[in-house]
Image (tube, rainbow, N blue to C red; front, side):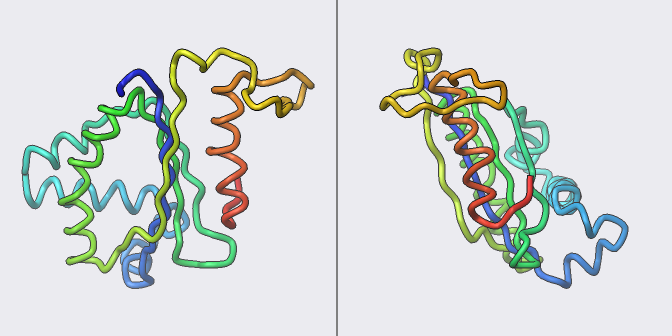
Length: 160
């Protein structure tokens, strides 16, 4: 089904050797990963490396280093539909292998959830009241985005 928005969350383990090799951006794991993506694209020149380098996400949010696990980095991506997410998965498979083979970087946790467009603008489903800081009730899509992009990363040890 393509008529739904997909939220995706991942945690990546970046070893000290990679962090040490990037002293000017060691505090920004997203920049480390962007540099490695560029290196992969420049090294391999594959169709998927170019596609992933130019990939456009609906939204992305990075969480930096985990508070209790110094080598763990987290990020959340929002895809406009399930097919968009499937393209991302196809493009990243070789990149992940390259990361692991060349830099010992591994993905340690991944999850995703969907928001069907036909219910996205309805009140939060299930009767649970989820409110904004202003006291307004969220729609289903807003409540799901908050739960996935804010609450879950915090519960997994990341700082917003």
